[in-house]
Length: 232
Length: 330
Image (cartoon, rainbow over all chains, first blue to last red; front, side):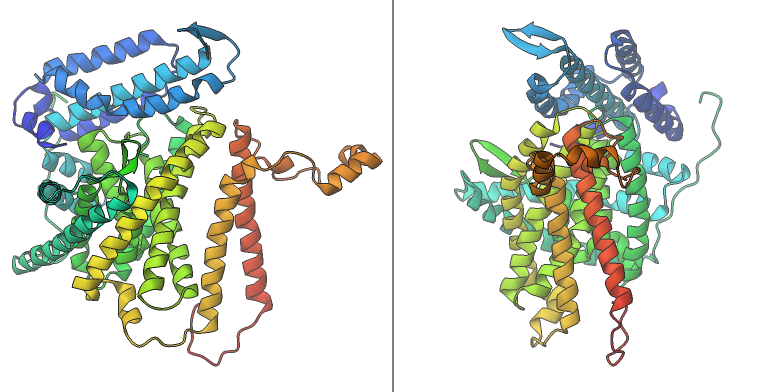
């Protein structure tokens, strides 16, 4: 679970990469809202949505394989819905592998899964073509309060650091023979987490000290954005 | 528990988004007021958010080869207060949706409501209440934290099931037992981890645990007033849990009076001439909601809250406190 995966593509150059981040955010939001509110039996609209995404992916010169792999994270939730299928009270039933399943339930499963995959792909595409700093700057210019932007920026900065630290703590525990099988053994995880919290809190104090020395008084500075160009 | 896009209906997502935005605005205002050093707020909340994010990667076994992971809402609430906890969880959820595709963007409102507002803010009165009721000291403090973090997971999972049921994605009779059942076990892991984190922090840096400063000094007798309000808060949370989760599965058989009425034949008469024609929740159900059980649970929750509010207001007005002690807003 490394997020360098997405970052890697941010450094490329393409039409999509150059597009103003504000426009990209709004486009993705509109896309999400439209596709999520499409009723599942409209299969052709989903084909159009998928085509749009493929076109954008090709335009951004990003390989489709890893993007789809990442979007498959929604499948466990689909399994949860699939579990409920036989109990759906949706009139007609369809025989699948000798089981009588409700037709409306199957549409529901199809719709939710496809929508979730499409949405995840759109978000990944946005993140893979926009460096995080530019995304935050655009969000700020779209009206998100500066307090949040600052927290988001700093969280993202320390994320990979702390995730690395968590991975090392876990690896150290495994190297010492930690192979948990049942619940009470998660106390060990708790101790690791406690250790991690102390490390991150003390890091916050050090960082804050350093920030104070450099003149920080409460809010970070951000670069202004120019007006939208003709391409947008 | 991270709901992806497309699993919850637009109506629910927009409602929860509005509620979450309001809750966040309140949280920011309160957190800014509560944190001692205002400028420290940004680095502090950011590192704690990064911590919660990283700690969620540490899976723990729940038996049968499956694993659960830490949520961290109560840990954050115990260390930073409920308002900051809500901000931290929201930041984590937004980043998870953006960077990892974990949870949807349109479902962000629902996810923040479940894990930030319900697990982070709404369970805080329970933590305070339990601490007021349980014996002062280490054991009481950790026990309160453990019970609260278990409750936070189960409550958040229950709300998630309700959202799925209200959207018609999964029937409540299946979603609620499945979600609450698995999370009742995951909640134990959450409780163990919360206690372990708090133990480590109390040992190494007792100065940053707000509650510990008061706990560690010589235990002083608490005023009866605080104990009562703590008991009330704990009772309210318990009643809400029961109303939400137990009422849909209560027996649908007529109660004693209804049965007698049926036998004596005056039930028909009663239903023909209703005393109150415009009941808020006819037969304990919220009308606009499709799923029958979800509707019952929701009506139970709203009813409980209304009854509590009425009782609270009545007591506030009827019982006048003697103004001998220092002025307090309770």
